[in-house]
Each structure stands twice: as C-alpha cells, then as structure tokens.
Length: 97
Image 1 (cartoon, rainbow, N blue to C red):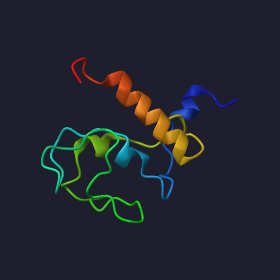
Image 2 (tube, rainbow, N blue to C red; image 1 turned 60 degrees about the vertical axis):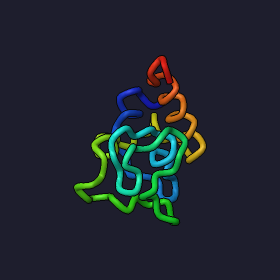
Image 3 (cartoon, rainbow, N blue to C red; image 1 turned 135 degrees about the horizontal axis):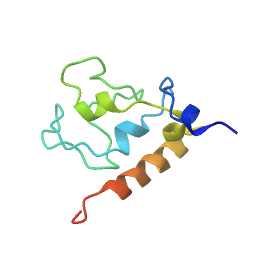
C-alpha cells in the first residue's frame, strides 16, 4: 500500500482527463468567463481535446497554477478524479452556497 506522502507527490496530468477544469470552481476572472466558473461547469478555455488553452499563459487563474496533480487527487482514472474534486468542492463550499 502506498504511503500518504507518495499519494501527494506531483504526477503528470492524465491526457484527456480535465477533471480539474470541470469539477473545480474558480472565483477569479477567466477569459470568456469574467465572473469565474461554478464547480461542475467546464471552463471556457477547455479545448475539444480536453487541454487547457491558457496553460503557460499569464491569464491562467491562480487557482489553476496552484493545483498540482497527484495520485490522491487524480486516482486511477478520470471518474475517480471527478469524484474526489467534487467532494473537495462540497467540503470547502461556503455555508451560504
């Protein structure tokens, strides 16, 4: 069984996943989404191949820059990643949401 420290070590993004571009809410402006985006909504900058059009751009939101894929968050497939991030959103949502 992997240790918790290994589960949180950064890993490469899974091509075609985009769970963090859909499941995560973003409160800062994004090009084409000036009010940010709610959890569960695909980002307007998500390309058809599920790649980020803003990757490496200064316009990329800070939350995206700070999110680092790891085994705990990403699981073994996109479905696990979506579930994990949706639960994290639920647990961290403001009480009035």
